[in-house]
Image (cartoon, rainbow over all chains, first blue to last red; front, side, top):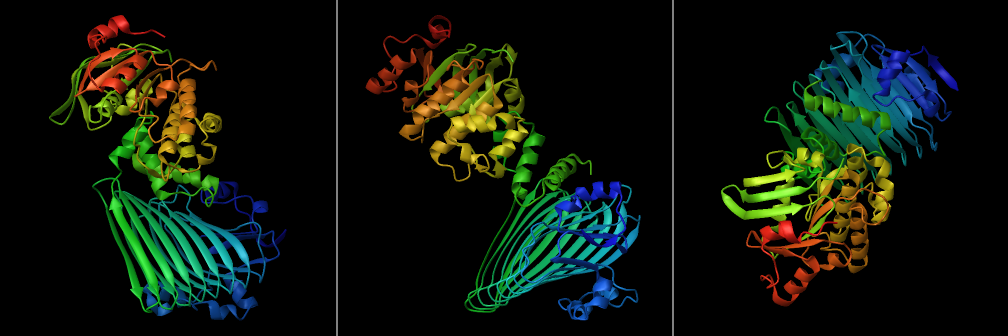
Length: 370
Length: 255
């Protein structure tokens, strides 16, 4: 194993991270763990994968400077500006998969906020080089003892020509935390990205903003499962730009509120001929508390763009509840099963440990234990 | 769980203020299989739904007892846990809920593979329940569900409708196995089966038939004889038929 940075994470931290996808490192092509405002641990088992602290990557490769803030404008938002103008060295990971590599095991990347009332400002850059193929699992967690803090992250991902990246992201913040995340990705010619985003744990206020730019023949498929128990507000704003001829995307968002607030603005922009895209935004409202505000939007800038969307918000169907209860399960068990089904937690895409954690999270949120 | 009789005593069933069925007296003894015949709209499915406790059906008069315990005031899940199970005629589609997930929730995943193979549903266990199933596949799944649930009394709502001929024998054989009649040593279960076509009579041993017309059971007797009469004379009272109340005590064929 080639290890570039090994300041070990504790058994307790590993247990915490296991809830968001961590597995022993011999099962992973690469591992990176950021704790508070430092890159604590990097481990590698695949020579085609390079992971560095971003500050180290900037020193080692001058071209990384061109990638940093290459997809996001520092003037876009005051929080981004704050990160850009910081006099401290940037904190975050730099992940690179070498050209043509077919990486067999997933790369795992984690953020841990361990300091109570801690503040994190992370800037992460990912480069999947031409023709490379990789799976990535990323997770965010806090110890049970930490209730409040503020996390800001900027992520810039570059998928070069023909690159393939399948990713799963699981966020498990604390109930009184503020989170602001900004993600930008560029998919070059014939690149392909599949993203699964899981945000189920309570968090006071989570604002996420993402922009994807697809060039000729690129494809992007993403599914997000969003849960908002009482006291949680999630505000999501995404734009998918189909900029290259023949680029395609499909985006499915499933939202459940058990008393929290979810606002989801999702925009699909067809900006080239032969592009096609679909937005699906479905909401399930479990109680009269809380709110789901769902705005799927289509914007055609080219006559040859084919865009469509569907949106729905409803409650749990009494007929389905009764059907399951007729097999002997309680109403709560039946509700949980329907919610899990609605969130459509694809067992093939989500690690078993994470899936179990999600099921526990739904049951806990429903019972008010979270 | 020992088998228990299901008793309906002077039962009236309504949806809101509208009475659908009345004066229902029926006793299904432990291990017995009864068949319910009736024209469209006679209230057969409503009766099964009301016994199971499914909304919007309510028992507004009389009592439904399971093993001496009154159940008509219990919610549907409590009735199921006491031993009632139902194969639905038109069950809902459950997007995202796989057969495997339901089996896991019922803590019956250990027996799923074998039970699914018996019903030719081995390839379905990772499919969402009833989503994209054909009519026959739905019926086979509903029986598989009862294998997982293992109730004492099975309510079948037209188990053969929509099933192609090559699968009717398999459905019948699976029902016989579920009911403990195939000699595999499983416990004997009771059943109340609605049939429209009567095909299932060729494959399931039933001891008693009932004819339901306009919301009332008008006669009871040997199910094959009753079905033969229906084929010849429609849903009319056969001259040989007993009164329903008498059938409950005199003509009931104990298994």
